[in-house]
Image (cartoon, rainbow, N blue to C red):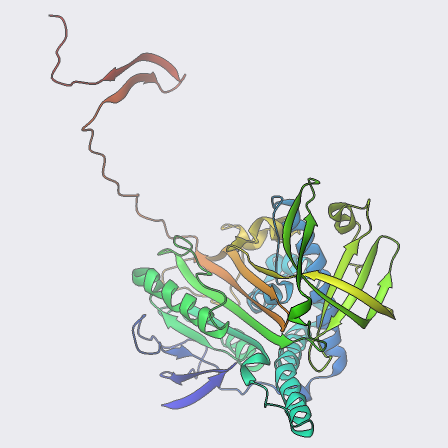
Length: 458
């Protein structure tokens, strides 16, 4: 066995892929599952042109606004938080195995130029490696500053940007070599072999555990109970974790309670962090936009505050995938008062939003074509996407920002019929009874039985 390190997760490769079909592995257990892998190394970011990565970022940012607005349309009045880049990594992995009209629709929804071929995968690869380097660079700078200023050494746990991918597939399925090659060279993963047919619950637990580990326990139960079943054949997952100090930390002694006005006009009391600092700042006529740099200045938290009289919903509605710009263009001395915030979203389905964006065939059991993932399922089945699930969190405190997200694309075998649901019904208490004419729905008799031993009148 040889040891592989994929995206920060070290595993033992129990099987090596040498042809278009994978070998069968063991199901979920305490040991690491077998891995179907292409015998290629991950392409280093240095081998990918900047233009290719820039094109991927442009597509991802267009997806960000489009997806956000569609999610808002189906959301309630509470907080909303998504990670477009996590969704994009998971969905472009899935796109690598889409064929025909399914691929065309996915490319449109993901704002990918299909004529660019495999460029999107290379761009995503370069982007994820560049993001992962941010934490290392910021920590190195903080260590240098600490040494030169005779200050305590910074903790490595406070400087983290982790972007990792994993794919989990039914162990009896033969995965296509080109698909596995893209996974290996652009996403740093293979396919963990699981027994979804007979042990989908242990597989769900294993995936959730992997996500929790990779997000420092910030994203738990990404896949809720019932999200997988015996028709599940593959789950493609991206996980992201970020933790950075502010470039200009907030003094905790300046934190004070204040009123926050809700959309309804009522107020709630919360804690506000306060500081006066020169930030990148602009005003687009509808909102004040401030960019708060995180340590080392390579990442920023951007805050857009609509003007009084401009509600947030109308401001968000004015944004578009082609005109979205939250760039703070100048500098200003900003007296900033920012609420301390900690929010974790529930596990949210992105299916309706993606279908509204034009990605419909992928979810259609009859129309979906993912033969690029597995052309010849052993059970004669047909793959389609059953759901795309995402969970995200963000915390803004005096010391810095922590955020995490994970996205799972669940593929099922639509040709497999689930067995009828088994239930227990013990009619051992008063009950309602009716005689109904099924063709017309006419109720012929309706009553209640409160005592089955009462025979009534002779």
